[in-house]
Length: 259
Ligand code: 5RP
Image 1: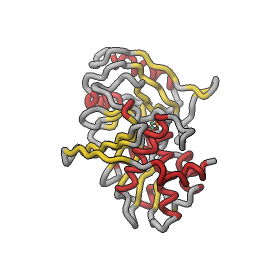
Image 2: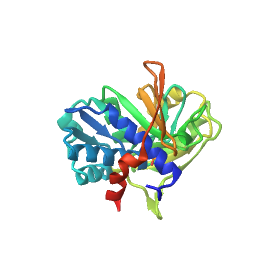
Image 3: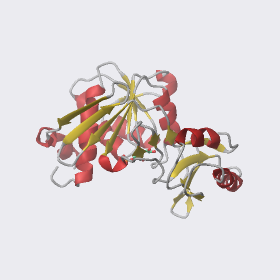
Image 4: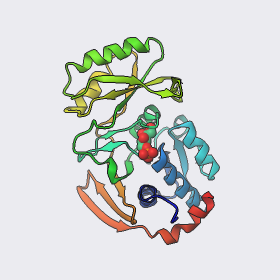
């Protein structure tokens, strides 16, 4: 545990606190990314201790991890509807609107979160922003004609309330990064998104775009972890903010198991 960086401790604290949302018998959407990976490990430990849940992963990476820690994994089509999804985010604002997709899984993440009664984001405080857009906005595009789609996106951005208007194809080495759905990702360098709802709607009208990484009115609560174990839960529907603390010593097993 002491080997972990403060940021990893913060991610762990958020993930650990978020497990309190999970109840026996729930169908749970499992997010993707380093924070969500902590969640999956924590849930794995709870399953080992008798918790019964069904997990719907949002990527092949998460599916592999979830199976590895003993969580029963089913597809969204098998589960149909979920009680809860817990996932990370690249940015969240005061209304709990999000940018997601830094890990390239935004499409499954958005489908799964939308098919859930509740979505809880787990994050460290570095993900909090006043206005979305510093983090490049991921947009999933069909490989066919992607360069034309990129041009169309950049032309469309001229009429939008954003500060930057360039985009880049996400790479994996010197090849395009390919999503679980076989698509590419364009990262839009916008710096500031003045009207995220409008941008999301307009982007999704462009042929070739499958989905964008703006999550508007999807997230219900954010669990913010800090490196010293403090945790803050902000619930947008209840309008509440709750503070608590995770005791790292009580969770030593989880970290030892990682070695
Ligand atoms: C993956 C995502 C992740 O949730 C997001 O990138 C945050 O990742 P991390 O928890 O590693 O910071 O949207 O597509």
